[in-house]
Image (cartoon, rainbow, N blue to C red; front, side, top):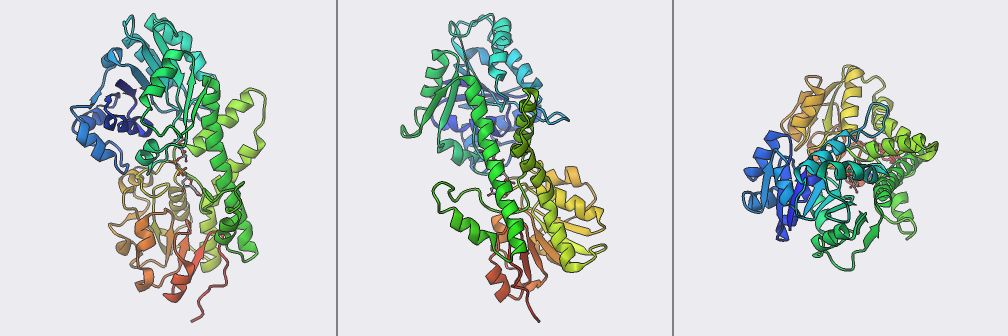
Length: 437
Ligand code: UGA
């Protein structure tokens, strides 16, 4: 199939995987730099596996453009532009509306049954609101010579390619049979056992929000349990492992730590809370989930203070800046919040991240000292804070430094650090492992 993808962000770029299945992918993005990179076979973002796919198909099955002309020839046009938060937390849909209008203008009077699929995360009702606008600008009619559907994405940064190729479900919220059939055909390589949820656009939009809200709730839940565990000298990891054995709970997404970050969970939660409010409903549970997540990164600062008393003028190593491992993304990263808070409290902060240094520099500027390696970061530091679950940190031999470790992601084995003579503290960890010299 001939596909257009408007917006070369995470969700959009991951559609490159469709080139592997024999489709032609045409990216449309206003960012000339991204367009040029894709055409040179380089992924504009760091995402495991994506560079290989883009470099393999660039100039052939993968092309990029800074205008919408190509859309007219395409069977399916995905809208994957971002939907940022406004200052009040509500969703800014202006990019989705703008992109949809531009697509509609580009396919105006085309003879093809072009299907427009909204992939951006949008509040329930958005696709239906877009319908008359797209019809007006394209001079086409949904169900006659135009398709319109909503196809949310559930991939995680850092494993986006893997998630795309192995989904747990495909959700298609459609208005016309033409768009439903086109989407089913496009995803026909996916194991037939994977459920295809065929529904209306409003429900598809809500599924996306409900899923991210459920994930956020789970993280704030286990973080709260972790904070309580500390008070009772109990290890939250043991607790999480045990409760995860109950099939009603399950083992995933129960890693306690410094809270969730990234461009999605917090933003989507805020948007859902505001959207509910606009309909006259106060989403109290979701508000609390966000609130808990706002303060969770500072738990590490409290632990440092409990340990050192005053932390002013001390030098600490902060390992990890990305909001999670395997990504260079620092958006809403708890690690960045910790760096800024430590700085505010007069700490000299040395930082290192395997991939996210450049992105972090844009926010942290010259408030911290940037290091080229874990060793450089730890050398001369009085404590080490682990803020991102990078494999490099998990595998690092900390024994030569003998400085206390504050594990915000619970990736180290406390027993091992004890044997190595390193004092270890972590979120939701019992304190009785303190080393006595
Ligand atoms: C999230 C969802 O997991 C995806 O399903 C969804 O498609 C995506 O948002 C989106 O809406 O685009 P992502 O933001 O890439 O994906 O990252 P997650 O793996 O969900 O992690 C989010 C944050 O939660 C990270 O900071 C991570 O460290 C934290 N986390 C995750 C925990 O603190 N504990 C856990 O048990 C799991």
